[in-house]
Amino acid sequence: MTCDDGETALELIPRQRRAVAPGVVHVPGWLGLPAQRMLVEATRGWARQGPGARRATLPGGARMSVETVCLGWHWIPYRYSRTRDDQDGSPVQPFPAWLAAIGADAVADAYDDPAAGAAYHPDVALVNSYRGDARLGMHQDREEHASDPVVSLSLGAACVFRIGSPHHRRGPWHDIELCSGDLLVFGREHRLAYHGVPKLLPARDVPPIGTEAGERLNLTLRVSGLHDGNPR
Image 1 (cartoon, rainbow, N blue to C red):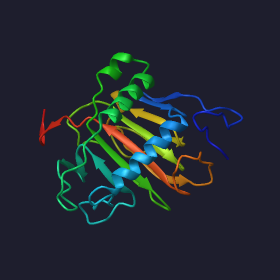
Image 2 (cartoon, rainbow, N blue to C red):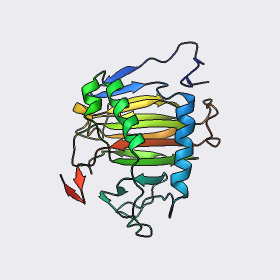
Image 3 (cartoon, rainbow, N blue to C red):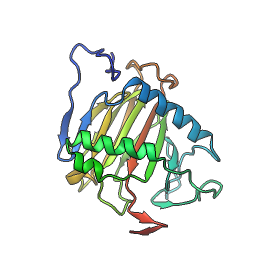
């Protein structure tokens, strides 16, 4: 089975953009192949800097199966820091302006609202790497002190993305198949929705963008609402 690679329709029935729930928009194939390759190369560079990616340790002692590199602010369950406190204490890598511009375009396109895009100024990126049986349990993104949307960009192997209610982690859920190049934006009524990645879909074909076999990369862009560790 195949996904749409963002430039050539590989499916007999092309996937369509859709509003999954209020404030949740899925845009298949939003990133073309050149943009995907550029982002994969960028993630490789970020992973080579300083202590590199790490599997974060949760407060109960369990380690996440997903490896993460942070930009702008370093995410530690469940707070942000300007330094990589759970690694070597070095400063977090800067959040590039060109990535913020991609985020603004994503919000404008997903919501069909240029003003919403112009008002979107992300300053945090979590770059997650999934391999093998890596997954992400149901959780809320609530460390931010701002209500701006979360922008998710998928690269490489496909996955099932599950999103539910902003009020509890129980169902009903919406399961979305995210393929390489897909954009997902969740905000507004569902900004604090519980969401997760229960499994990868390694049997789906992946375009030649530089990812390894079975590897999924995901960039989530957020607005921290923080200034030097304090709410703005």
